[in-house]
Structure formats: structure tokens, C-alpha cells
Image: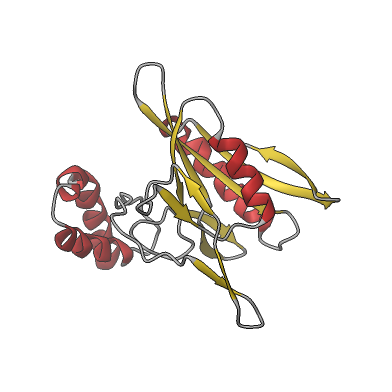
Amino acid sequence: MLEAAGEALSNHWLNEYRVAIAALTDERQEAYRQTRELSANPLDVFLARPKAWLQPTMARKANGTETPLARYGKHMLCDADGLFPDELNIWERVVLEAEAAKDGRVAWYSNPARASQDSSGIVYDDVDDKRIVRPHFVFFSRQADGSIVADIVDPHGHHLADSLPKLHGLACYAEANGHLYGRVRRFQRLKADAGCLTFKSRM
């Protein structure tokens, strides 16, 4: 009872003062993030703005040779040429090109697959355990009124065992938080033949 009451009070304070906490230095915010991680149940946290990454620029093949990674424009983080190097598979490239070409697009973000302050994660149920899916892309568009809206877009193979639980988790998140985004989409690759990909958009 005491532990439950303590966690409830802590969670209440963290939510009540979340705006003030977000204005603190990165070091002070980290202390509050660690406190949130002690919760028995997942809590919403502010996504930290990425400032700098160590991003690979070369891909190493099995024979030891290296080739430059493809570089893409309009990423939130970029090199001196305004480009971002990334190793995308074929259906991720198709989705990126289609989404980046939409009217009003101003930037996109390759959401890190690792657990970090600058990675957006969404909780889903996997049997009796809580896990986190990290959508691959976040796209930003300028609205007619000048405001910026974010879209979550996640290309994913339907053949994986956790595909359905992740889809359900994203659907639940979209239902609860859809008003904060322009769109929440999950693209599943249905087939690939002769270099042609077919996708289904979910949510």
C-alpha cells in the first residue's frame, strides 16, 4: 500500500510539473527521467530534442570493403551539405520518398531504434509483458496557418511474430493521442517481386 501510494504521488507530481521540468537543463531533466523509469507502469515522457549524433557514413560488406551510405535531404540532423546518411532497406526508401514528397513537408526524423531520450517509443502488450515499438519515421509538415504538425509513419514487415501486437499498440496510441498528430500510419509490406513493392496502410 505504501509503495503504491508513493508511486501515485510521484506520478502525479511528474505530470503536474512536466512543463517546468522540460525547461530545466538536460542534466536536471535526466534525474526526472530516471525517476519516471522506476514506475511499475509506463508513463508518457517528453521527447528530448536531438542536438548531435554520431552517424555512420559507410557500410561494411562481408568481404571487408566499404561503400558510402546513401544520403537524404530534409532530415532534422544533417552534415555540412544538408544531407543525412542512412542505411534504409528498399521498402523504407519507398516510404521515405513517397512521404517526403507530400505537399508541405519541411523535415523528417529517423527515429532511433535504441532506447534513448531522443527516441520515440510506444508501449504494446506482448503476451504478459510490456514492450516498446519505436516507429521508424516522423515527418513534419507546415499547415496552412503556419503551424507544424508531425506524422508517425512506420514501415514494417507483416511476417514478423510481433507484427500484430505492435500494430495493436500503435492503434491504441493513435486512438488516445491522435489529436496530437497529423497522422499515425503503419505500412506493411505485402509482397515484393521484380523490384515492385506493394504496401497496405493501416490506421
